[in-house]
Length: 271
Image (cartoon, rainbow, N blue to C red):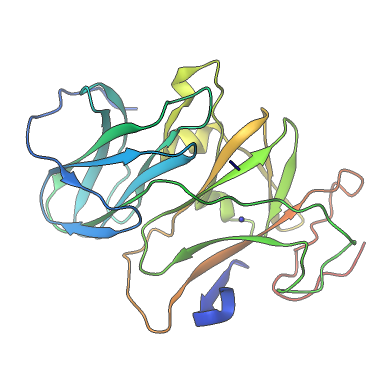
């Protein structure tokens, strides 16, 4: 098997809570990539069938508050994400070799802390981002081939892509605040507790720092990791399509304080 100064794009611009017993009820299937809405507590279900990370995410309106719990098909509690109103909760699962086997069925459960409306989406995981080896210093702008992107359409709740990194490998994201929305999830096959991660756990575990007005991400182990992108905004259908895209660039250890995409989407001169 086996991509602020974040860019808002239009159209072709970018072609720990206590476990509770799961209640028995019919589970609503979540189609891969589809967004559904709800106004009450509900049990959902999806099946991961590929060796990728997958994710389920919900975003309540600012006047409601829902929490996201995750169980496996046997009813075993796997974790929960409990951010407040107006924030996206997500639960991600690593199904790469050595972690959760596939196919595997998961049961996300939405519970209501304050009733209202929410949107929910599952992404089974089928895409990859490659941090490209730079061919030159500096960047020439948006179309520079050294830059990779991860994107979230305006009508989506969450975006996830696998990325292969070696221990100690780093990459840049374009904005100093990107760690609030772009999460690097790492799972260690030796520790099953890392195979399922909430937004809060991902925040605690990822290694980031702000340098040269960009965010630097660093992997702590070698393997297939996940990049999860959220926007803390209700999905909106637009024509042409809109959304956000974050530029990513490889780190050069010989230039530790120089971000090649510091001026993105404009060109960044070589140091």
